[in-house]
Amino acid sequence: MIRWLIALDSVVRRDTLRFFKQTSRLVSAIVRPALWLLVFAAGFQNVLGVSITPPYETYIPYDVYMAPGLLGMVLLFQGMQSSLSLVFDREVGLLRLLLTSPFPRAYLLFVKLIAGTILGVLQAIVFLGVARLAGVDIPNSAFMTVIPALVIGGFTLASLGLLLSVYVKRLENYAGAMNFVIFPSFFFSTALYPLWKIAESGALWIVYIAQLNPFTSVVEMIRFAMYGQIDLRSVLITFFVGTVAFMIAARGYDPQRGVLGRKSQE
Amino acid sequence: MTVALSIDRLVKRYGKLTALNEISFSVEAGQVTALLGPNGAGKTTLFQILTGLFVADSGQVSILGIDIAKDPVAALKQLGIVFQQSALDPDLTAHQNLIFHGGLHGLARKDATARADKWLQTFGLSDVSKKPCRQLSGGMKRRVELARALMTDPALLLLDEPTQGLDPKSRKELVETVFALARDRGLSVVWATHLVGEVVNADTIIVLDHGHIVGKGTSPELLIQTKANSLEDAFLALTEQRHEGHAA
Image 1: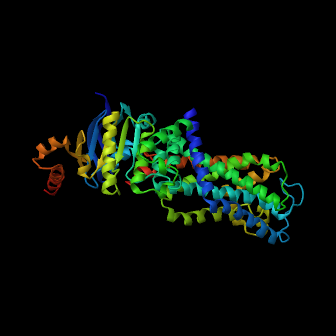
Image 2 (image 1 turned 90 degrees about the vertical axis):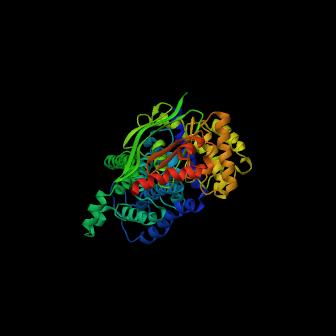
Image 3 (image 1 turned 30 degrees about the horizontal axis):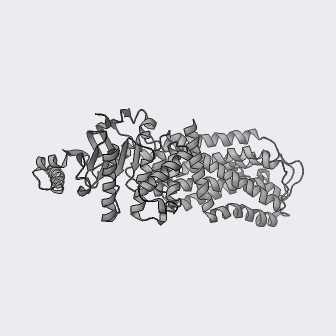
C-alpha cells in the first residue's frame, strides 16, 4: 500500500513542480478567469438582471452568478492542461516510462488524474480568493464547502482530458482540440447565464445542449456547494461522467484493447 | 543456471505484416545478449512486448519465470529499461528525473535520493545532477537514463539501441560501461542494436531479420556458421541470405 502512495506522491510532485516552473501557465490560470470576472461581469452587471433561483435566496449581482462558472473554467482549463501534459509526456517518451512502472496501468492513469485534480483545486481556491478581493460577494464558508465539489469537478474534467489524450496524439493538434472542447463546453452551459434566461430569449436549442453538457453539472454542483448545499443531480451526473470517461480512457491505454496497443511503433 | 528471460514462440502482427514470427530464445542470468538486426527487423516491437507496452498475439514471455501476460506488475519490477528514444523530462534536473523514477517504482524518497546520488556519481554525473536535462549533452542524457534504469536494482536490463545519436566516444564509453556492469555485478542484459561493433563481445548474439531469428551464437560461432571473416560480414550474410530467400 505504501508503494502505491509513494507512486502517487511522485507523480503529484512532478506535475506540481512542472506547473510552478511554467510561470506563464501559473499566471494565465488566474488572469484568464479574473479578466472574465473584471471585464465581462463589469460590462454586464447592469444589463443582466439575475432573479432569485436556487441556491440564491435574493437578487444577486452578475459577478456573484458568474463566479461558479469561472471556477468551473479554471478546472476545465486544468483538465485540458493535464491532458496536454500527457501528450507532452508521450512526445518526450515519459509516458512509456510511466506505463512501464510496476503498477496496474489504470492506477498509473488514476494518479495522473489525481495530480491534475489537485492542481485544479489549488488554482480554483486561489481564484476564489482573487474574486473575493475583487469585491465579489462570496461567503466565507464557501472556501471550505466548495472543496468537495471542486474535487469531483476537477476529477471529471481531468478524466475528459485524459480521454482526449487517447485520441489526440501530437502536440501540434492539441490547440485545435482544446478550443473545440473548452469553448463549446463553457458557452453551452450555465456558466454565463441561467438556463431560464436563455429559454426566455427563445434559444431553446442552446438550453437542450446545455442540459446535456456535463460542464453545466460541474458548474451547478459548484454553485450550490458555495452556499453549503448539495445539488444531488449535478453531483451524480458529474461523478458518473467522470467515472465513465476514466474507464473509456483506461481502456484506450490498455495495450490489449486500446488504440495504443493497435498502433505500430509510434 | 537461472534463466533471466524466456521467450517462447512469440508472434506479433500489425494487420498483414508479421513483425515477429514465432520468436523463441532465452537469456541466462548474468549474460549479455545482443539482439542484432537491421531497421525493421522487429527489435523495437519485441522490446514493446517485453516491457508490457504491447501485447503479443501469441507466445509467451517470462522474466525470471514470471509470465508478463499473467502478472505484468511482478514482471516489470524485474526490469531496468533504456528506450530507443530519450525518455527524460527536459525541465527536471537529472537528479529529479531519477527521484521521479524511484517513486514510480515505489522507492521511498530517502532511499531514492541515496540511490540517485550513488548512480549519478558512478556515471560521473554528480556535477551536472542539478542541471535541467535539456541542458545536458546526448551522451550525458544517455548516462542519466542508464543510471535511472539501474537505480531500482533490476535483474534484467533492456537496452533498445541505447547509443542512438551518440558520438563515437560517448558510444564507446556506454558500451564499455554496460559490459563492465554485466561482468562486475552479474547483471543480465538484452542489448538491441543494428551496430555490429557494439556487441562483438556479447555472450550471445541473436540476429533478427523481418521478424525471424536468422542466426544465433557467440561471435566466433557466427563466423564459423557463415564462413565470414568479421562479425559484420556474418551479419550481412545472414540478413542477405534471408532477403535472397524472400526474392526467390
